[in-house]
Amino acid sequence: MTGMAWHTTGPFFPPAFIGPTDGDLTVGRDGTRVEGDVVEVRGRIIDGEGHPVVNVIVELWQVDPAGQRVGAADRFRGWGRVWTDEDGCYHFRTLRPGRPVATSGGSIRAPHLCFRLLGSGLMRPLETEAFFPDEAAVAADPQLAAIDPAVRSRLMLVPDGAAEMFRFDIRLRGEGETPFLEG
Amino acid sequence: MTVDQSDATQPPRHVPGYRKSLLRSPLAPSWPRVAPVEVPASFGAELVTFPPTCDLSVISPGRPRALGQLIVVTGRIVDEAGRPIRHALLECWQANSAGKYIHPADPSPVPVDPNFEGVGRIVTDAEGRYQLRTIKPGGYAVPYDGDGQLAGWWRPPHIHFSIFGDGFGKRLVTQMYFPGEPLNAYDLLLNSIRDERARSRLVSAFDPDLSTADGALGYSHDFVLGGSRETPLEDDHP
Image (cartoon, rainbow over all chains, first blue to last red; front, side, top):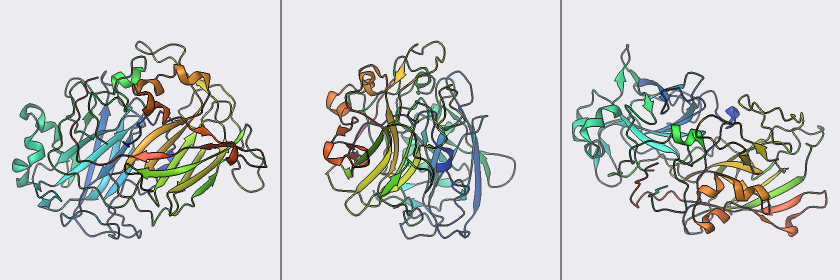
């Protein structure tokens, strides 16, 4: 028995499902701040005609500031979700994932953020990963290495003015298309 | 969820006639995963302690019941091995009995029912069970969206579900349909799934034994969550 078929969320995903701190992973499960280096990531989602995509549900998850998989009892939630506004923009506050990231499969990963996009027109979610350009481990990340060097740079977070502020724009289709990873 | 191009049990990214699915589907195939995805062990059920039953037919005690045919939808959430998933979070949303969503993005001139919001959350019980009491949603015409959109596309009555299983990796966003609806045979989304059996699993079953003395018709519907991330590999051109 395989998993059931996915469908699009359609355009009417209820905003009420997304709480006021769902995009702020620095707020722990108990409602208090979790220790770590705070980073902000914002970006814009653009469709195949260059238009901003509104009402995309952006889910983010990551390992904790020590580089460990987030456990069910940890204060750090390790995931959040927001939706894109009328300009197609989203914003997260989180804690920088620790280094190195040792996966359950034994490989060593560079610190990264995982994204999943849901929304109208997306029959199945789109997933991708965003990497920190100032992390030395990026050069040896096995997932990044498996992606065509010509498009690899599109998965790098772009420093955005202040320290620990980054941009990650996502182009769904066409010129400058973001590389997506299998679900 | 892992999907390859030959997987007839999942919809394609581009559904012909559905304009937004073209504008939003990547041209390049997805890159294979070469390392496990380290997902958080929990979405946080300890924070969202919703009961395993939910009643959308009455907004709050004392308010009139929403207009339309009262229904009960019940079933289990299981994994691919058929094991129940306890404490899974279901988020559901639907149109009212006339086919109108209470959402700022719904431009439809169809009337609003002041006694229906159509949004609910449920956490499954120890056997993976859930029960939703609501009114049957109406079908509606999808607005024409420009070149590439099928004119005269109607959505059949359906309920949206977004599910977080045990462990953040088990995730499903889908829609549930009703048996015997003439629009089912014409719907672009349902019929984009080529495998007949996979399609039929999205259609609930009428079950007279679930119907209630106060006038609710009963439907049973189980959800099967994938989420094993071991299997390769996605290669889906639109």
